[in-house]
Amino acid sequence: MFYRLIAALILGALLPLAFAPWQWSVLAILVPCGLIFLWQYSRSVSEATAIGFLFGLTFFATGVYWIYYSIYTYGHSPLWLAYFLMILLCAVLALFPAVVGLLLRIITIRAWLRYLCLYPSLWALLEGVRAIIGSGFPWLSLGYSQTNTALAGLAPFIGVYGLSWLCVFMSGLLFVAYHNKQCSLRIIPLVAIALIYGLGYTTQQIHWGVEKPPLLSVALIQGNVTQGIKWDPSRLANNIEHYLDLTQDYLGTDFIIWPEAAIPTDIRYIQATLDHMDTVLKNQNSHLLTGIIDSQENNQDYNALILLGQSHGLYRKRHLVPFGEYLPMQSWLSPLLRYWQLPNSSLSVGPTTQAALIVNEVTVAPFICYEIIFPGLVRQSLPAAELLVTISDDAWFGDSPALSQHMQMAQMRSIEMARPQLFVSNSGITAIINHKGVIQKQLPIDEARVLTGTVMPHQGLTPFIYYGSWPVWIVSILSLLLALGFKIKKN
Image 1 (cartoon, one colour):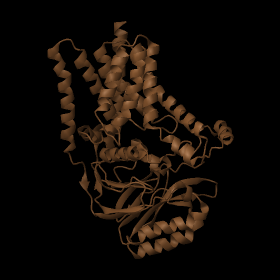
Image 2 (cartoon, helix red, strand yellow):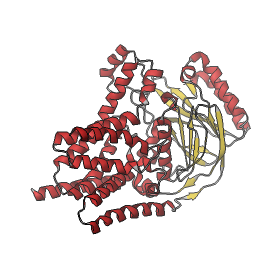
Image 3 (cartoon, helix red, strand yellow):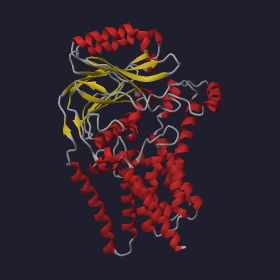
Image 4 (cartoon, one colour):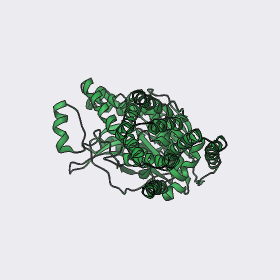
């Protein structure tokens, strides 16, 4: 038992390497396969549950350790408290693979049915639940690891959770191939894996949708303003001037974008500055989109963005970051945060339905930071949107894998929706992503730079835009019912 628990810890620590920036994508198949062996030979329900929990603990601890940066470095909490809160989050997230281990153990059915039907269905369903509970935290969903593999060709059909299902299904196929006593039959699961990759490669050649002119020239402004300076009221004028200086040489570009909260104050406080910027942009036939704070007289504050220049628009963030932008269970947790002297925001949720942004007759779907990691939220803007735009500020997490992981999830949204995307971050990564999810150009992190280029909008439907993740949920639920049906029949 001891060795199996140690192996679970090691497997959990290895799995983040399947994601960006390392992208050892094959680990997304091999690691879940390794878990099968541990669960198959576990001796009790409690051991199987412990294997899942320990695996999840190291998986999330090594995959999202960067959360402590924002708590300690920018939240100015004690180091012990930052680590405690990070470990607490990882322990909560580890409950999900623990549930997988528990159910695989107590549902006693044939091994091939358990690992080809039940296992991938449980994994995908619990990833979906993880994206829903509270405000959701779908970070490190297994399917994201396949962004740069042949399996990405299936994303316009089944989305990221469908790719998670497939990865775990192929793990089961590997186990069945190894476990089959007849050598002649071992080849069948391996052929099935080859066929899945072949199907993915074939579907990658499909060109979803069509180009929708005009071609837009873009200038993405990466200001690289440190958090200590950015949120200092006395530096506001200097910070705006910094962005204006970076933008000056690119006036006349169709679409200029500043990152999230590039103007970290209320619209009303700098209306004169915005009016002046608007006039200059109109004279240059340009559009400027920038992050800003939008405060209302009823004490509602929004993380927002505005569009200035040739056309105007306002968007308020719809999916807030728990603890960062709002406090869940406020009546319970506020006293604790005051005691620990932790800062917290109380932003409001933007309206579900908001007017589209239009740039040179192109319909733009805007998203602020955290929102791009939710496929259902992005899908709400489709098929009307012809271009995705994400503004972010990942400087809260230092020079950590969070930056590459965030970018990888944004790439997956472009693949699912067959839409190009402009991803603009304060300190990086800032990039132009095409409708296949391929990064065409990007800036180095931690530098004040401007990324220029062109982007061709796209329109049309993918199966995922039409159906969303529902086929995955239906197949997973039916697989779960099938497994339970076999168990009942056997009993």
